[in-house]
Image (cartoon, rainbow, N blue to C red; front, side):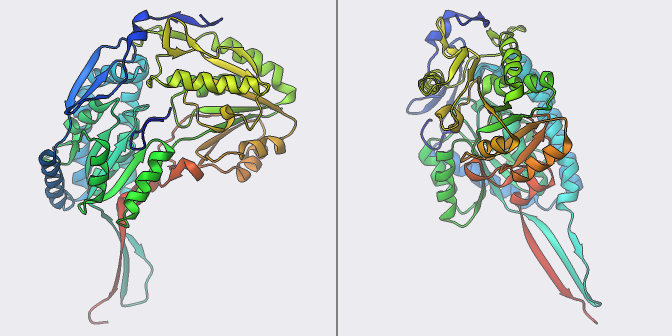
Length: 492
């Protein structure tokens, strides 16, 4: 892990390594000098951007601008805010090619996947506008004759959003767009790895008839705490490490404002004895390896009924062999470099600890010799459930497997974690899925699917996966406050 305010998580047989030795020279992303944040391409090591840090005067100016904008923006009818946010989305769409390329150059995601992220980002924004009507329209309650009871959903003010690098468009859009629709303004600090993504949001949504609606800020860690302590900031949204979430929660607690915290997961999958193995194997391997495994809802533990164990391993080995590691700008590449320079060593240590505990390494298990920022897709079997790779977030392309003898054993193992973001159940029997879902401690339970955010459902977690919700109409609750109107009408 990086220090607490950062939003980072932290020739093999069958793997096609189409990589450049220049990757070995790639420096740490987001290098900090006294005045400038430097961003480097994790594949080539080339300089992507240099952005100045805010000084006291520039940060104060942005705070004042956000506060002034809030006073005007909140007064617009919801229908008008929806219309103007749609205009911002069109600006974002018009810059889609540049935005996708910058995602790839900053954090290494294959370009096709970055382009898909742009499209999904815009879909999320459109869905948020639909949900806003149900979420923000006042609730009219039944009241005695002569009385009126109503609940308003009022904006908070300036929202401070700290976004992570792994899905650098989807993570901020889940806050920026609903915050605007609710009547708030936003200061957006992106990870030091992906600050150009924050700038893209500011350019698209920053001035929709009113300047200062969304502004990007480039901050040192000390400035983050100072900004949270400023009385003009009314809410904090953070996606990142558990350690960072604890620090954010302590800081907002000093002011009794709230924070939405998405802090990661150790998401399990259970393949039951009646599962469609072709579907299940494809799902869990993709769920573990998409975006090089750098996803808070990636499949990080696989439990399989012993009767299907051998078949799962055979299918998983075949699927893992199909990954093309290489230049993320090349169309054939479907797995890019790891964004964090320390991630390969961390993953290798997890694998070695598991093997020392009795696990079998079936493929992968180490960085590529000629390209150390790449980690070979890895399959481990017979992994003890208390091994680090089964308990601590990996954030890499690892598939650790453990056979079980019953649904009850699987459920016990799945709940044996401090995290609780998602869990998936692979079964043809709907009653089994319902029964297991009732006992699982996680924010989202999937049947025959995994590693997916459905925007009509709230995205939330339990335990060390954080607190609060984004997406759906429930995502507006943390970005608004309830005002109860209790009127005894005149003349009654």
